[in-house]
Image (tube, rainbow, N blue to C red; front, side, top):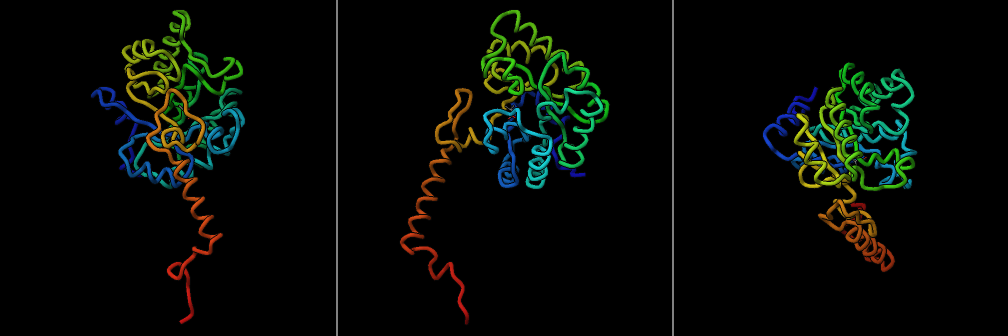
Length: 270
Ligand code: KIV
């Protein structure tokens, strides 16, 4: 076992000490290696890989196999952060036996340290059973992208006092079931504050304001890896798509003008 890896105890300690927790997605070895060189304590192998690397228009088609393949390469590249792998759509809804078999695959075959699943009170019993099997679980409430068709789009959740109350109850049910942290996605800041103040476990927000115990962002959004996409809840800390485009154009131009490779890049017989 890698004893240097961040544990769920450390994440809990960060909440108690009021130390903000950052989490970022990764889907491959190269990005995981770069994240490993920072102090970011949690990597999420998110099913947002559907949108960001597989070219789907939602997370719904993502499979357990997709998550396992990515988790393997992420765990190979990142030895320090806690690795949380998403349970994809319909990998935990059918029955507890198939759920636990899928959890086993993410942990034993993928090498994840914890799993994340979407939903509140309705998945509380499932969370309890996964935790009882010895696997840490991160909850995810508010906008739950796997239910985009039911929700009618990627919309702010918990806007009415009734829906806010349901989300608070969901958060409490997940905590009661043994979840070690909860992602709050696209909910008003006032509600994030109430949930964060009420819970003993950390909340990790995305589009949920500054009041959460931590923040999670998609790697591609933070680094500007899409020339057009720029969600309100994110901030581009780099504009890599534009940088990469220029680099590729320069390479192409050099090949066309026979400026690459030069002698320095070539091999010759003595
Ligand atoms: O898959 C993902 O990237 C996520 C985050 C939005 C929390 O679930």
